Image (cartoon, rainbow, N blue to C red; front, side):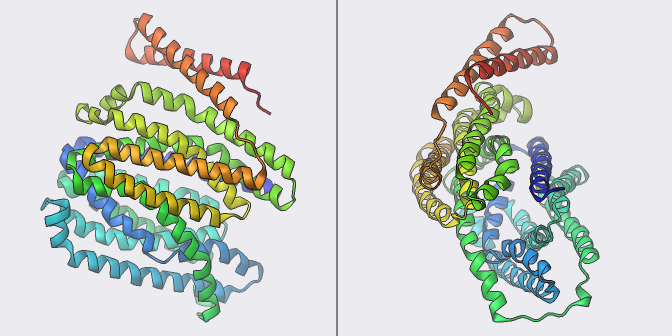
Length: 478
């Protein structure tokens, strides 16, 4: 198998397993929404988001550096450096994680009284601090497998973890509000044990020496810190709204928002699937200086990603009330408007994430860092302004506006460095086809008198055929 085909196969495998893992993650939220009251559901995700926000600082980006340097050490057969790098990153990660966990533990009374404003947060916080330490070590192991180019092991880790969490929710359902915290702790502990055993079987640590040198540490840090800055921006944009909702609004709003936000973000996974499979070719064409082929490839990625995400997004947008009611319950219907706003943001972010990946593939990560840093600051200002007044709607608006700016800036950069055009007219044709699809679905739904399952099947089938027909007529794909 050629290197290019292997990259495509690995990327496709990671995407497919990631999609399954996202499905399990969504199922976890559905189960939790029925096991807990709305306020309890909101409280758990408020504590969870708060604790995991600090994961970004766990090792200053060193774990991502392993994925870069281990392949280089393997080629040169510098196995001592592999062992030294892994042990060093694990040590830094453990020290920093324990320090953060201890500080949060010492601040627990203040946080429970002034931030979470519920004594029920105490046991959740204590359990999740243990999860925080285990999870951070677990991430180092997973990044190590990426360094060894074990894509199958890497691709299955999140699916396995979410399966263990779901299993824990069933086993510990009688534990009430602490059941999800225990489930996440158990799942990560099991994952840590399983993948540690696999790593030790793959790489015999006892055969090699630990020889730390300042140059090695400097190289790891120099690669990791820029990644840390970019990751910090994405984490802030993705999580600061939940943190501010917890402080400024009610736990019920936090609970509802933690349903609508993941729902919208699943659409991002759908939209970026094509890019994930084709990005190795982007890097290849750039290195080979095949700029015309690269521009055509980027143009096609933009069109096909939009083609995938638009019909699903429009269906969820139009039927958001019904969607939330069926999957989560009547009390979550209040999230319909924020969900609609976030769906628009998800479409924007799907395209923006594709642009960001392309810029990274052509060696322009610093551009991404600058864009994300600016948008992160904008997002904080928007959240501080809109959330106290408009709650969930303000949070959704802040997130979607931020994603719009990421899309605008990354699109400008793509055009600057590649000369690639943005397929605006094709996007409009695809969007119009989606609107016609929704109109046809509403019409068919109004005239059919069948049971709910048959009706849904025929409505989706006919609407899908209309959409594909219009796309085939109006949009040219290579």
